[in-house]
Structures are given as structure tokens and as C-alpha cells.
Length: 324
Image (cartoon, rainbow, N blue to C red):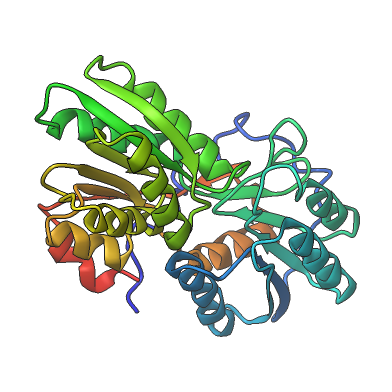
């Protein structure tokens, strides 16, 4: 599988003096030939999560990791227990995509107390309760607010009708991408008085649940002509529900989404989806790079930001072979 070139390390300007919090209280990471690395995956029920886990496993050999990888199966409580187990096994460093913003904070703080540097990957925690540079080293990931804004801006520029009646399929309740993708999209789209969000409901980032939620919302709002999904899995589920109801995605209803999966790019090529904003899962190489910088004594920027592309009918076919 090819890696998306857009997992950019965003390292330029990272060492600007005065811009970074003090890392004096964070656990150190000594330089050595091999590291015992913990990766606590939150679930493996969709292509994005599977691709992310594979990226860490593929990186383990090249980065000299003895990788301990777990799967919390969608349970924040199990993910906390998984981290506890990794701490007991004596990991050197922890990479954690927290399922929700609040429940994983105790795990983050426990890892710090055990002297284990922790990097949050692709999702973060409530910044009012745990902060980069204090409780964990850094967050590696995208700007979810910007992703939502870019989806809204594409819709504003490409919507042909007089009135956009929008149904929003939200991600996992309490997760940072769901919170931020909603904020980014809602704040931007509601600046254009052509649009109204008539319903917004969680589909938990899952294809089948997205389909079920779309079926229910379509009955309540038969005049909907735009669906904004917080990820491609829910968008694909929504397309299935719409087609079963006799609607024509891409014709009488516009689908906008986030992630950049193979199925989404194919849906764009087929004319069923308008846009998907990339959110790449290939974090393994970035995790290796940032960990090695930290072990070398470099100060790590609190947010190692990934730069995301946008896929439309103009370029989906050019990139589908890279997709997962």
C-alpha cells in the first residue's frame, strides 16, 4: 500500500523559541537501539482504523520497535485498561488515539506518572484537563475544524440550488474529530443563508449505523438535499439508504464527507459523492520520526499538524490507487 505523501511532518518552524511550552516535567526517552512501543487502538471496525494499525505495524520493523498493539473494540473503558496493561509491561513510549476526549485522560496521566512519554495520535483529549507539553508530549494529527470548514466551503462554491436542506451525520459523541468537524462545518455553512441544518445526529463513524440514521432522518426530512457526514463510512452508509429510498446521490442530493477512503473516492468517480476532505491514517512513519526527535532531546511542538488534501471529481481518479 502506498503512503499518502500528505502525512507531512510539519517540522518547519517547529523550534521557534518561546512558542513551545516547557517540557521539563515530561518523562524523558533515552536513545537506544530498540524501543518497546505501545499502540492502543480504539477499534478496528472500519478501513481507516485498520489502515492506521497496519501503518504502525509496518513501521515497527524499520523503526526498531517491539510493538505492543491492542484493540479496545470501541470501548473507552477497555482502552484505559489496555493502557494500564501496557504500562505494566514496561513500554518505553505510548502512542494513543483516544476514543473520547474525557475518559482517556486518566490513562494519559497514569502513563506520565509511570515515566512513559505519551503521544496522542489522530485524536486528542479535553485540553482543559490535559495539555500537550505538560501531561503528554504532543498531538499528532489533522486540524479537524479546518476539515469541516473546507467541506462547507466546497459545498458553498458548488451548490446549484436556491435552498440547501442539510442533514449532518456526526461521529462518535464526545470525540475530538466529531466535535471539531461539526464546529468547522456548522460555523462556516451557516454564514450562507441559503443553507439550513435541519437535523444532526451521531452515526458513531460507522457505515451501518450511518445508513440506519440516514433512513430515519430521511423519513423526518424528505426534502433534504445535502448530507454532510463526519467520515466516509457514514457517507457510504447514507448513500445506501438514499438509493434504497429512490433518491439519486450526486443528482438530487449532494454528499460531502471527510477521510479520503477508497470507497469514497470511487463514489466520487461514480458521481455519487461530491467531495471528501483527506484525513490520512498513515501515522506510523510520522510517529517514528517524532519519537526519534524526542529521544534526541529536541523540543516537540505541541501539535505536529498533518496537512490534508481535498478530493473531488477533478482528482479522485488520480489518487484512488493510493487509497485504503
